[in-house]
Image (cartoon, rainbow, N blue to C red; front, side, top):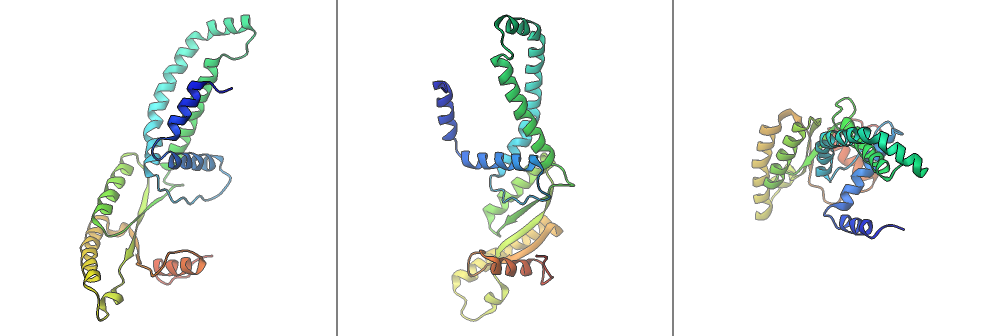
Length: 226
């Protein structure tokens, strides 16, 4: 039977904002750590959780190292008590083992996320003020933790041919003008790290035909491996 205080903790944790995203990222870490595949491609919406793992790696390592040292100092007494009680492992040792497992998973994730030979992050952004600010802030945080950023993809750009057509509504004309300013800023701030511009599509990118169409646009008409 699970103690009431544990049930209360689980209930509180499940109500945490972005709990689902955090759990998803934990699962991604487990899958990557297993090493069963050659490549892993993730749409990493919970950006903060990747940085959380990186920032917590050092904290957990130092904290658990101190706990381990204290446990080792007490081991002689604990082993004597365990023998008297005919117990193979104390509850504290079980907790320590769990903490060490958490530290191992976090350190594994940290190594994978910062390994430039194995990992690459691509930011997808649209030419709007707030998104540019958020992207720049995220890139700065990635640099702080030495996470490799491989490039940027600019999405939902209004096509030039649309804007050159007759009878463009004022709303679209204003949007194009706004995008033009932000696209210039993107070129200035990110330079050759911008890998592709994807135009605004008339429908969602779902299904193989639309994915193939987007791939041709991104790769400039080059043959895309299937």
